[in-house]
Image (cartoon, rainbow, N blue to C red):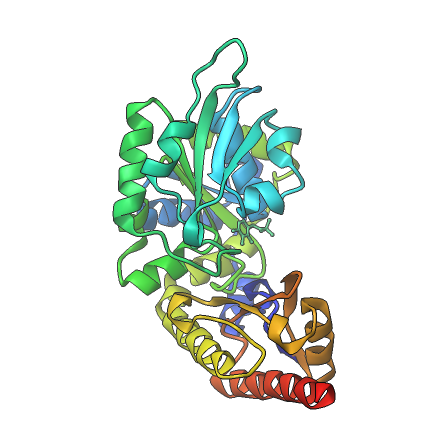
Length: 348
Ligand SMILES: *Cc1c(COP(=O)(O)O)cnc(C)c1O
């Protein structure tokens, strides 16, 4: 099976498995796991923040960040297709007592001019804005990258109004690879960042939250409350360190494969995608012209040994990663072409 459903499916490398078996460990709830401590320090250093916190999942990292920045009864401004609103089981309501104020933005890129008029003070009817959240790269907008200048303008505006900014940077290393800039340049002005070790970076599990020392100290307590006190977590931090240090440098290969897929798909009758808009490792395309729904197209692909998820209606998503080679992308393209061609022939 050629698995293009997500970069979450990547399996740990041989070096990661070796590092897991050899990891020096201790009890991380006592902050005595040397490997976890090293990972948290390195993550903070690489992102240019004071401190880091290893969490089991990205959802937990975002949940802790939202809790750290908000009070019950506040609103969180976010892009309407974002992960925290659509794919985290309403955690911002369940755990932090906040409502989302979703705003649709072209390409998933929230800009200060667009959101500043949405910021609300506490009033007799209004819930006050407590936090602004941006997603970079933006998953459901198709792996789009927010320009650094837009992030900084948004942070400047938000901070002037006394509002913190959290970045869901699940794939912020993909953004950095696409821009050819260090991650620390991208996140310089945001107050906290969550990124995933377990996606394109290939670790078997784990995400990082980074921010101020004071925030991470409080975040550690929320992590414990949520069931994330993992004891000898050095066995996860060890592959996490390899993910962090070694894997970012190869992400451009995934981006080239995604662009290759997009260009091929754009030439298939019945499929619509703009290859120029594919900036990183995610591509979203429309199969409406084939007469199939996304779910039907996905099922037909599966019969041909290719896994890809339907997003909604006639939209499909493919995600490239290091467990899918260029040759396999070529095979996947062939399968798409076959499905579209068979459909066109049947309707003649
Ligand atoms: C994957 C992802 C997360 C975190 O997901 P988990 O499965 O909880 O690790 C958060 N935000 C975005 C944009 C993601 O793609």
